[in-house]
Amino acid sequence: MLVLNATFEPINVCTVRRAVVLLLKEKAEVLEHAEYVLHSGSSTVPRPVVIRLVSYVRVPRDTHRRKITRRAVFARDNWTCQYCGSRAQLTVDHVIPRSKGGDSSWENIVASCAPCNRRKGDALPHQAGMIPKRTPRTPGPHVFIQVASPRIPTAWRTYLAA
Image (cartoon, rainbow, N blue to C red):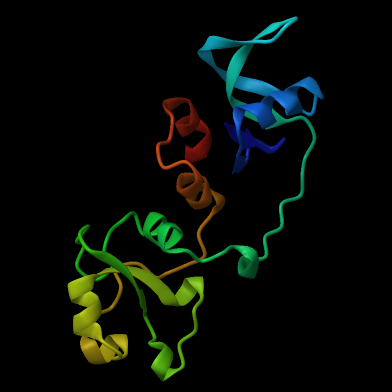
């Protein structure tokens, strides 16, 4: 289930069970539901697909708290090598190599195919003549939603596009 903040900002993905609990406690409302329903001993409710929290929840924006994972880097970079555009044999590359003082931050890591990563080695981008197509940045929440649920249901697309 896609969870939206009161402002319609996507903030999380949760299980059906958690979504129903939020609905029963009146902490959320259903925006989109599936065609089939959930049955309990005393009631029947449509299966939620997108819910919105009734009251605003402050989401921490500390970039250091957003864990850097291979899947998150690949999702941010659209599963594409940032040097040649290939989608095969993806690895992660430090734009400024760690051996040259580069850190492991969102602004210094990009998706790279294995051949480009080997060719660049521990050279600086201008030395290797390999500048990433896009400047690496800390990804927005949509990337983490994509990592949590690689298959994005059609009903979610409207809310993730904003």
